[in-house]
Amino acid sequence: MSALSELYREIALCQQCEIAKYRINVVPGEGAEDADIMFIGEAPGWHEDQQGRPFVGPAGLYLDELLASINLKREQVYIANVIKCRPQGNRDPLPAEIHNCRKWLERQIELIRPKMIATLGRYSMAMFFPGKSISKIHGTAQKRDNTIYYAMYHPAAALHQQSLRQTIEEDMLKIPSLLAQAEIMTEAKQQPQQLTMF
Image (tube, rainbow, N blue to C red; front, top):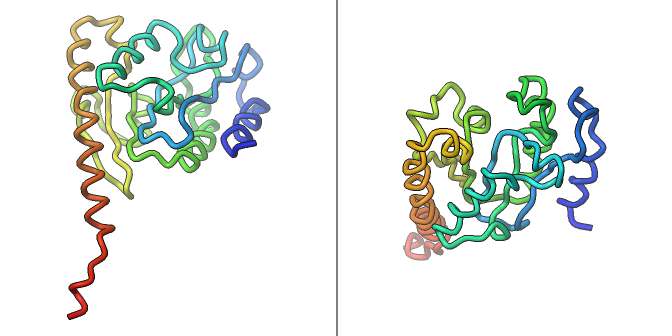
């Protein structure tokens, strides 16, 4: 059994938060275990809770369209959420819930080792860009410890606010060139530097 499947088993047994009592399914995440890009949303919604899979409702269908715009399929990336259980009534996740689930997300990041983490929405953004505002930093990237952190609006935002649709689509289109730049920088570092001996 893969380390990721083992982790899913552990997550499924978690009862740390009150919301665990109300879930139908825990929603750990899914995708390629060696994905270059990891998308992190906020919390499962009704559809996700029913199916135990992330981003399967209307926002998920839109995310699939966004991925297609950069020639990617869902199976090629990894998709997770900040918290793994659906908050009742789709309310915002509480600080304690985010704190309790953080270890699961950190383990997922360690196992997948993505080249890029794209945060979808303000809760996942706050984890990696503390104190920042999404309206100011969406579509911008920071590189830390060989990982690119990239802030985006949540796809659901476009469903509620049509005006954000174009912004989200433009931000998505920047991803391939950011990844390509990172590849070039990594390769340059790994070139053997033989000439320095003379």
